[in-house]
Image (cartoon, rainbow, N blue to C red; front, side):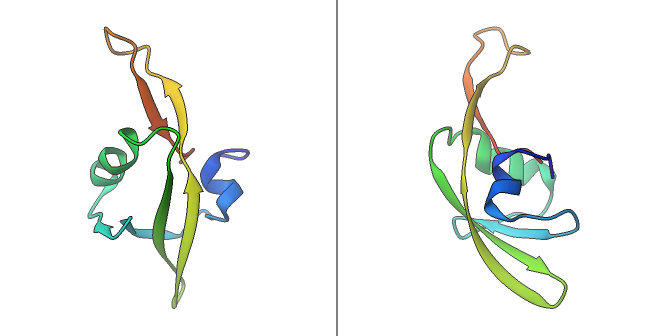
Length: 80
């Protein structure tokens, strides 16, 4: 979790397991990136497991330009 990032601001902590984004299950980091990337400027709901507890966190997805791609598109990032 990046200090000062959107995920940290929403209460996500290092060690939390992200189970789903807006109700869509995420199996791995690729699923998570795919779920967040196309949603700049939106707020998403993360279902998280922290220890034995399940939480739902609202995260405001930040839009950033991806200079690694030819057309430099605006992509969603939450700072993890």
